[in-house]
Length: 167
Length: 91
Image (cartoon, helix red, strand yellow):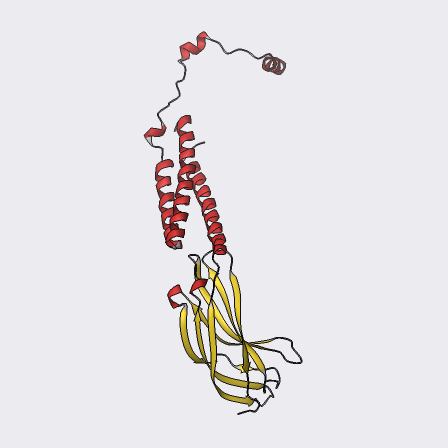
């Protein structure tokens, strides 16, 4: 009854149960961390602003993104996915979100960064509502843990606007 | 492994795993490294396996002392009334 196999089985079962418990505690320990991220985005230039042949407005712009997201990282963080979205209101849709740029931060050492970039993904409106449009740039982030619950939050930056005329 | 050894082996296994889990979690949390936690715990599980799973001699310190057959014959097993009735009906 109390054989080699029985003892090994009992040990492994108990060991894995405790491991699951440790992972759960690791995930819960993330709640002790209160992140205080900061970010700033400047629009350096509107490269071009045109109406596509189909009638949709398209903008190309150059941004200067600087952020300090080091406080998002805990011992249980594998990586952080971030993206910048332009958010604005049109008569048809109360919230339009267009992703302009994204990145994966693999480690805390890379979480304080500065980048000068044009939009990675095309900024196209559903229609031609972009002339003179006021919009927000929002930095969204998703914290991917090694184990447990994912966290997501955002930082809204207001006060951007597009030119009145195509160029 | 004798009865006493089984009890000791099982308790040792549970206590060792729990202690290693606590040490691993605290060390990992303090050093801020998930990997260190996993490595310490993996080491603990391996050590516990080596100590409590094989049938080591120290689990056999309390062997059962069976009565000598001649001693048993001197004190015959008491007959239970119910069981003897059953046997009788079968016959």
